[in-house]
Image (cartoon, rainbow, N blue to C red; front, side):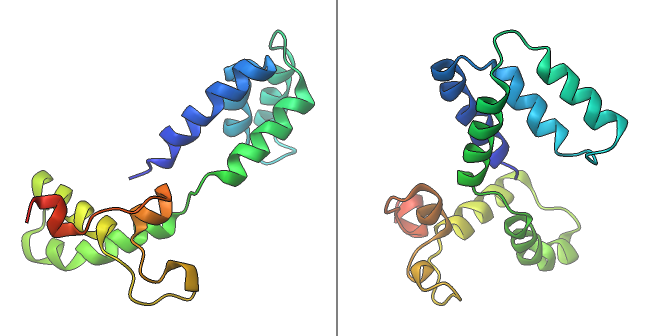
Length: 143
């Protein structure tokens, strides 16, 4: 469900190589976001970030912010799916893995008929995420 984490991790690799920033620096900065800025854990991660060899601290922070800002992440997507499968959960108490996969494909390829954001109308979540046209649900199934 949290596929953005893998995309985020992949996004760290290229800039790390290009700018000579250790990939571990991005992981530390990401983990640091879980702590309060004045907490012991935050200061400890800040120290370990500064101790990485070849680390250009400011470049790492700026690149991390740029990558994080360009990565779509939201719990609203998960909450949306939870709300949609809740009626099935009430009936069966469990959702079989194959059925769950089918639901994910359906909801990711279903086009929005209306939205608060005009650019989303007529596009599916998969199209919005990838920026490419995607087939309809039945086309994906071969019909």
